[in-house]
Length: 272
Image: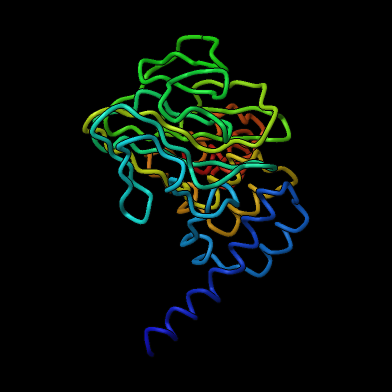
């Protein structure tokens, strides 16, 4: 089999899982359950799907402050001095996520900003930012102190344009939330000397996506019926199972559905 044939075969095998992910993200349990009738166990176990339907996350070449350097197909940002950079993606509607990995040092601020933000400024009236020491700055106003982040941490930012809010996660654990978005936003960070930050569109096992999206209508149970204990045991890049992730983001219905499936599959009397 040629490399092209192998690639086409993989694409054919993965396409139903991408459709399934779209149905889960859209909150359409009927479509998700119908697709699960056509997908086998191995496909479910192999699937790594994007948390949001956004295009690949990159930094914007034309939207960076002085001395900001982009590399790795515009996914990595460095700087010799203080400065900010916007993402290339303008978020106008729906729910979207992006992840910033602190590869070397830490960005002073990470979050979202309006298109007309001053790229050589920190927090101001045009952005919502989490500071590395944990302060949440919402359009210039401090709205709380939370856990900070450090080198090696992954900060995921979820933007919900319908609810007009931004939610911050550190290593897939929900940290804080801010509201008040009134216009389209882009990813934004403000970094200093010798800091290296990479942006990406996060991917997770399919059960983790269902946990994050608070999937209803029996989708979680059906996923477990197909993928079994192997799917339940899978971990995200942050080392969390889907149940641990659902607990962290307070999706109690998903936690209860997982626990119900486990209790039915492995009743206490069968373990004695």
